Amino acid sequence: MKERVQKFGRFLSGMVMPNIGAFIAWGLIAAFFIPDGWFPNDTINGMVGPMLRFLLPILIGYTGGKAVGGQKGAVTGALATLGAIAATESTMFIGAMICGPLGGWCIKKFDKAMEGHIPAGFEMVVNNFSVGIIGAILAILSIYVIAPVCVTLTDWLGAGVEFLVERSLLPLTAILVEPAKVLFLNNAINHGVFTPIGTEQAMEMGKSILFMIESNPGPGLGLLLAYCVAGKGETRSSAGAAAVIQFVGGIHEIYFPYVLMNPIVILGPMIGNVVGIFTLSALGGGLAAAASPGSIIAEMLMTPKGGYLANIAGIGIAAVVSFLISVFLLKFFGKDASLEEAQAQVAASKAASKGQAAPAVSSGASVSAQDVKKIVFACDAGMGSSAMGATMVRNKLKDAGITDIEVIHFPVGEIPGDCQIVVTHHELSGRAAQRAPQARIIPIKNFMGAPEYNTLVQELLDARKAGSAPAPAAPAAAEEAPAAAEQPILLEKKNIILNCKPVSPEEAIKAVGKRMVESGYVEEAYIQGMLDREASFSVAIGSHVAIPHGTEESRKAIKKTGLIVMTYPEGIEWGEETVRLVVGIASTGEDHLGILGKIVEVAETEEDTDALVDNASVDQLYKLLNGLE
Image (tube, rainbow, N blue to C red; front, side, top):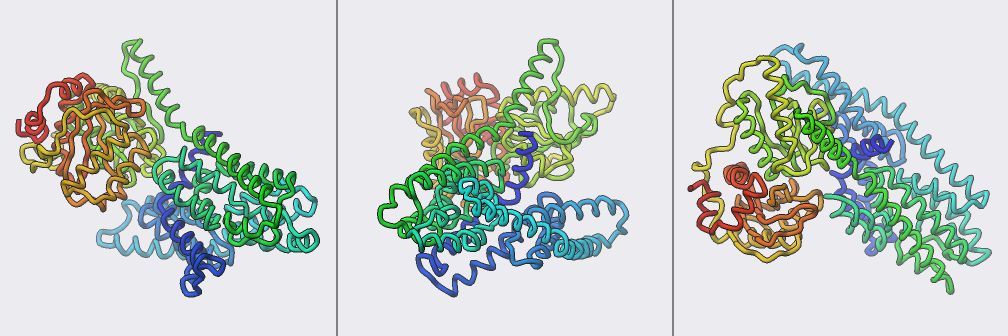
């Protein structure tokens, strides 16, 4: 059950997370310029509705279609999503999450059916018309099938909330309110159900708790703070800004994508709101009128005299409970890869005790070792750890006499569809499996000296011996990194800093980034990209080596290729690793691969790295890593 929830959550995350910037832009515009915002402006407010109704759902549908069916799937998914949007005034986020992948799946099936049957020269015609025809059919289908299903679902949720309110089961309303909010029914529930009833109560008693059931900013704040603590990568780095927009600006919609990308965390705001409503009921909390938007400022302005303690307690307790439960869920449901890793270690240990080669741990597709022609190493940006891992395995295959397998590296979002094996960090294995469903996924903990490398090479060697297959000629030299001697000088002597004092990983990354900025390699923004990369998963790649570099998104901050080398003889405690050699990377292309290849050669094991750090001078490192020695 846990594995299914995680897989579903990862797939939703793959649709939502790439578009989180658009959600934040919408949230900022809404917070500042809606009629009840900080700086009301009718002209700018005119964007709020179209962004919510059209732009955001279409972006999600486009991304979902692309994840399943590539660029053609993206266009088809967007067309299908537009059909769902056109059928109703309701916000079609759930419809987009259905239509996008459906469009990608349909175009993928069509392409597979047509493979080998398209006459030469007609490929573009068939491709364009297939997207147009299938997209149009799905758009019409969305109008008459998908949109009505989504509307019916939201109507049921609204009716359920009203049922509980009429029977005075207030705390239980949160069980339906929070899921309904995530479907963007927050305004419909608040102003269509709670406000009319609450207004009658306020006229009689001077306040009503109903005004706070949907507008309480505590549950959403707790969830977003949980992502700040237990989230990873983009979710963690963006959650702080989203928390400010949600709590101070009152735009609750900003946290909905964080639920959609991992649906199990809805339990955090749900239980937090239940406890918050119970607290408000016990202490006599409530507002004199509806708070719109639902910000902490609006809540306080609408609090009647003598009600501040109760309302602050209701908001604060809801936030704390939501935070604690959400942190637990994020941590518990984020450890699937470690189970795979443990299974790999058990398998390797059992094989070693029997003197046998253990099968490489894999997830995803089943691929015969005899059929392997292309192995892809994938990391977040495709410029550092994956390049070093690819170099290491390429060398091991060459030493084993296997020359017919191409070993390349790519960002995880650009894995080619014709590979048979993908080796990636265990925290990226879910994304890799979505991107390359045909491939066998081998999750690893670090890219330097991972035990899975030897296991994989031995498996491939055994398969070739069993099949008695002669090794074809080696791939063209152009497919490998250029010879080191042909590389430009990318590592300057001034950027080799020896005998640094121990610092935290974050301080080490900032030190590398500062040197990069001073050397003109990157803009200041690249440093944050490096920190985001570390937050996603550690840049400590094993063998006492760390290679700080930015995310794929931060590449635009790179001015030119350059490297920084810093040694820490006393070591840095870098998560579960000890790091003594830090190599910062900024790369606009493939020029740096020669130096990375040299690092693989001289720092393959912990002992190699230790000897290098303890004995090498600036001149020696300059010559060695630039390929001059």
